[in-house]
Amino acid sequence: MLHHLKTGKVERPFHVGFRAHVPFEQWKLKFFAEKVNVEGGMDPADAGVEVILKMAFYGFIAGYRKEGREVDFTVDDIESWIDEDMTLVFDIQRIWGESTPKEPEQGKTKPQKRGQKKP
Image 1 (cartoon, helix red, strand yellow):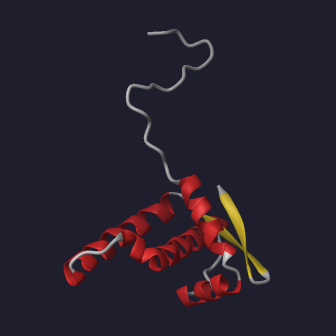
Image 2: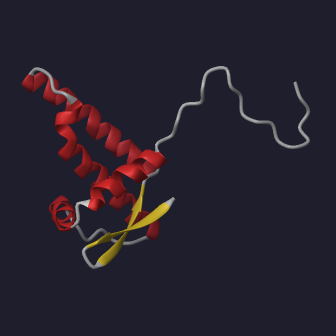
């Protein structure tokens, strides 16, 4: 689902779908692998700022692509937007949380469509 988040005086498209998840997950794996190798381990909570920035970056990139717009911002711009309004962090986290696919519970099947015969 495409969202529009207010950044300063401008509303910008923000979308968390496959195009945002793939590069974010690739970055996350590399980021934590490097932290473990270089620093001897790291609590994921300590990486909060970098993770939020990447979530924001990939979400805005995907939103711009979805609307066919050319990207006109950098990570530094996103930091400025967050500095101006910290509630942007909560919006980004909420949208990512709502957009992240959930695994189906074990043993549960999809509901049958109306009129479908039972196996």
